Length: 381
Ligand code: SAM
Ligand code: SF4
Image (cartoon, rainbow, N blue to C red; front, side, top):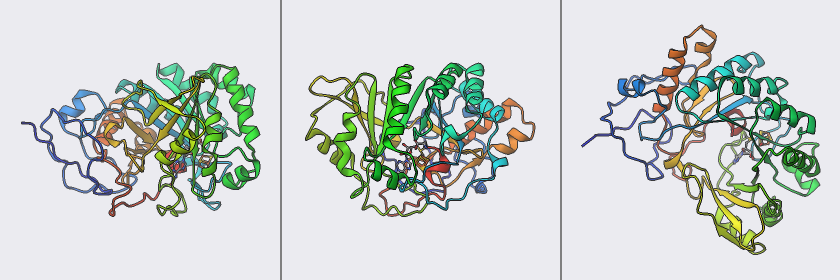
């Protein structure tokens, strides 16, 4: 029988939190020479894994979805994400357009079929259209982007769509202007975001997803109002449980609102019917409106029901650190290779090796859980 050994994981020693598929290979344990954190290259994965030319981890999960943070900057300071005085990476450390495009192209050659641009706020990158166009030119992957929706003019959206953007997710946490301003600590408004949503729908950037994070005592009374935004064709409103990824490290387990609670609040107004067509790799469990209205509601429940066992994601931070998990406490620095004249083969092996180190699960609710130093805005959600 094949033996599977745990990779060297410097993060929470959490047990697998989902049904992890068994590996078919007899996998040697990764050498116990502890790699330095940050700035380091991952330890070599087994030769059979490297030769396989796919991004698989030591638990048998395959990476299909690459999330690239293209900036850690943001024009919002959402209270669950960024403290007002959050420090940003030096500009020169941010990946350039050719570097981002190169990573996307090499990832595609390793089986990635979707690239999601994120941040920080990706629309703050003045060269966003060039990033999208470059990825489109070099790959056939689906190109998605997630944004706070504050800078979605019709012209900008049309330019990004023409460049190759296929999908958009827009975050909106409140429909009440004053609350929105307090929550996002911005001068933007729900009306600005919803105008951008309309423009995106008019340009057929669909299906369009909306994201909200509910916080107890802050906006948890808006679940049904937000769900109502999705009662139209090609829109899905998704509720994400608040995770310990805030830059202030203030998550203490008292303010997150569970998917079950959110669903119950929505169902008090709009009964829901489970959809049976969820992609097993999807982070969301989706529902239709039982009264037959178009649109969908989704729940992303990393805290109450972790989906790590089906994870198909790999992340690259704005400054070029490859993170196998949102909650990784180890990350691998690909920038020295990109800027040091490395061949594609070396970048490929780096990505394969980094993926191999993906931890089993995040263990948010385990006593051993340690919040990663990097906040969501620096990792890319
Ligand atoms: N700025 C863009 C936005 O807000 O959509 C893209 C980056 S943001 C980090 C991506 C997503 O992560 C957003 O939907 C945001 O609500 C979510 N997010 C940020 N911090 C979070 C946290 N601590 N827990 C759960 N979701 C979080
Ligand atoms: Fe900015 Fe998005 Fe974080 Fe809000 S959630 S502070 S918009 S990166």
